[in-house]
Image (cartoon, rainbow, N blue to C red; front, side, top):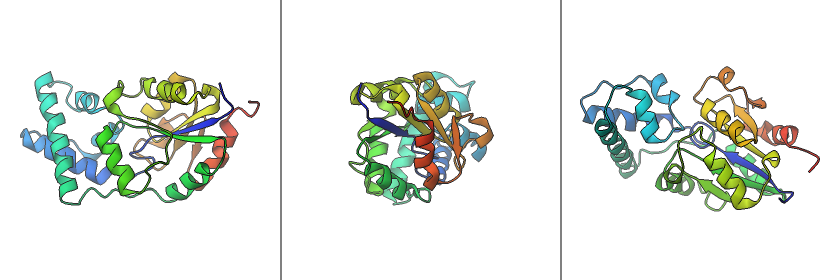
Length: 223
């Protein structure tokens, strides 16, 4: 293993405040099936999961056929938002500056582990001019849903980075549980979609500009 360090980011709720478009797409999916729309808290509680798992949690009594239709309806709603130029979730304050700061450090690699599809992540990276920033991009198309550690383990293997030299940065218990399952350090952010006191990370930050110091704190300094 190399002496490189890897910082892996969740996207929705960590880098991008996408709650408005996620709730709008969920609303479209449920209304297309003439179902009651879950409240915003319930919807935000499943952000980060794969769509199949998200709908299984939101509709535990539904059958597989209905869940497939809801997944398709969600994707169609999102496509409609893009077509209407309404998919405009902003980066959280300070995110871009910190990504650029970390990107400039020679021994630091950046990654993404997201419940988004490949197409969805590509749209986010394009919209926010972040193409080429991340050295590894793990998406829901190719992995089991969080908190399965597959995304992180694949990223470590791709880049040849030891788990002790990697950290997962996220806003949900799914991110933190995934990080712990993969054996990497965990950094929770307080501004996301799960209550901060539910995360139990190695370190919790309240603003993006404190992330570099948090990374240094949790990383193994005796590499």
